[in-house]
Image 1 (cartoon, helix red, strand yellow):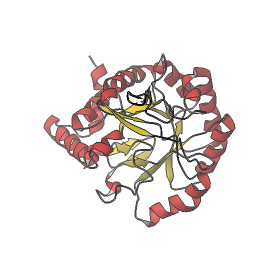
Image 2 (cartoon, one colour):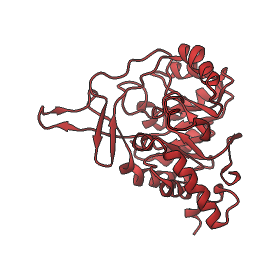
Image 3 (tube, helix red, strand yellow):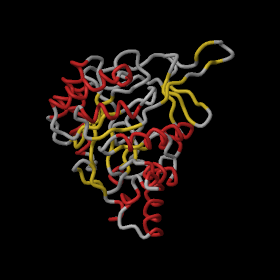
Length: 306
């Protein structure tokens, strides 16, 4: 197992595999399938200051090579998160690293929630979500504007001492430029890609399928886009990358590492195969043995070394 041990932003992980926010609940939903402590970390469901019901109507639709979702950041709010969810996770034996994904409608929201999570000892890393494409306010508006992305990163950096990962949107013209800007404003790492904006239409009703009209597309079909963007961002910044977007098996994982991701975030893959992380872990261990690697981190960014 030592060949997969990873140090990420000063946090020790048993392997470079974490979950994608929103795809693994609060860490206990998959306990019937495997022990979540076998993951390097769990990125918890996105949290806002207030409780949110999410979007109305149809929230999920299947699409070739993936899925569309417009769940809309449904969550119980920071009060319940602090008082119930975090204490219960530890009581139920989940000891792996916890990463919190924070969201807001305004700059003030982001600042306030960052202050709150900074006081939660159990949280190892903060993921600042400025890239959610399936809510009608906040979210992607922050991630799509370089100046605003820099400003919200800078203000959140001021109020938390925890390692700060900024989650980037692929629905932009130049993701490498935005990555550079958030790096300059205090991000310790970036995570990419979030979902790609898409939609579906019901030809019988002649109306959009999703209640929110548009939603985020994820799954295997977005993998080439994610790889390309990670490759570009790796060359633009000096901070590490959390890679995600269509990782469904061990070969996908190896490609993301070679493109420049230091750790890997699995999302839609869990919906297809709840055991996917264990299968990927085995592939990575076997690869280290076959290639004579002391640690899997030796291949991070190797596709650039030509």
